Structure formats: C-alpha cells, structure tokens
Image 1 (cartoon, helix red, strand yellow):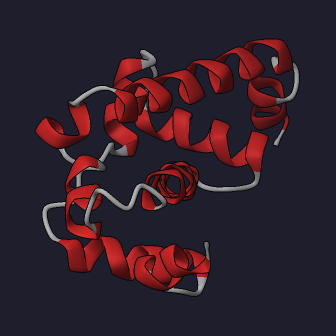
Image 2 (tube, rainbow, N blue to C red):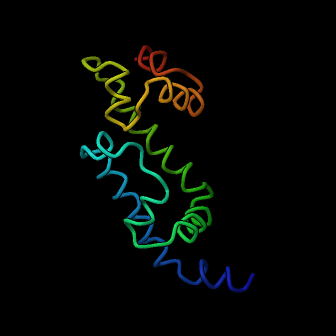
Length: 126
C-alpha cells in the first residue's frame, strides 16, 4: 500500500500533467482523421502515446478520476458524439464512422448505454 501511495499520491503535480496530456490527446484524436483511419482509441494506444505502460496508465487514471481509462475514453467519445449529433446534415451512420466505429449499431448501443437514449432520440430533443 505504501508503494501504491508513493506512486500516485506524492506525484499529484505529475499526475495532473498526465491527465491534461491525456485530455489533449483525445481532443486531437477526435479532431483529426485518426478515428476514421485507426478506429476507436484504446487504452494501450493512449498509454503508448503518453510513454507509459498500459497498467500504470490505467491505475493512474482510475486513481485521479475515479473512472477506468476505458470509461474515461468512452465518456469523451460520447461527449464528442453529443456535439456532432446536432449537425443535421450528417447521418448518425456518418457520425459513428467519424468517431471510429465500424458499425453504427455499436455506436448506438454504447450511446444508449451511457445516455439512456439512442442517438436519434437525443437528436430529436433539440
């Protein structure tokens, strides 16, 4: 337990920097065409980009945010989707593809799981 505390608690400044870099990495990922070419960002991909092991990275994100790294990525993905859904010139299928999903059904399932409604239902709210 002392080792764990030393690794995560005493390095709060460094940990915050990693969180900022992680957030920037995800922002850049979804703003560029990486999602369309590489698919959904994985925990391993993010850890590699931040020069950390996947296990250490996952533990750090869990300790700092209370969410697993995968949950954090999915929340970012859903927030990005919410912004794009209100662009009525794009179909849900196109938005799913832009975010890195191969199949719209997977996007719809994740969106409903996280928000409680389908993308079409969410779009019709506004």
